[in-house]
Image 1 (cartoon, rainbow, N blue to C red):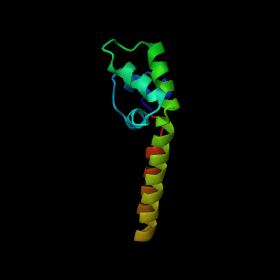
Image 2: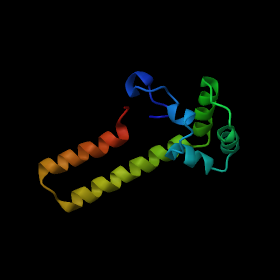
Image 3: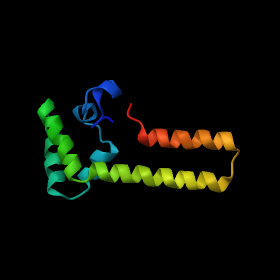
Image 4: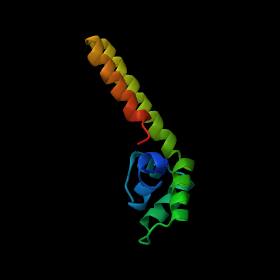
Length: 112
């Protein structure tokens, strides 16, 4: 959300996490990818210059090309699947189980 989120939904500018140089999961996954895009991203983020809108878009594109977004989305989906499997195995009461399933899906599918 802090990289690709719609400002009308998130309430903050797209790329705000990049402007703040936050090392979020997509960023760290991209940097660890060993790709040329990762090297370009590393150079961009090491700069002491403020990131302007064009540079933020470039950084978001580099994260995408380095596989950071896909890696983070897949990791989140795997963890939700695992949590839901564990929840089912615990055989909880129906309403608390439904609440936990809703929460798990909200956390990975939310847009704000």
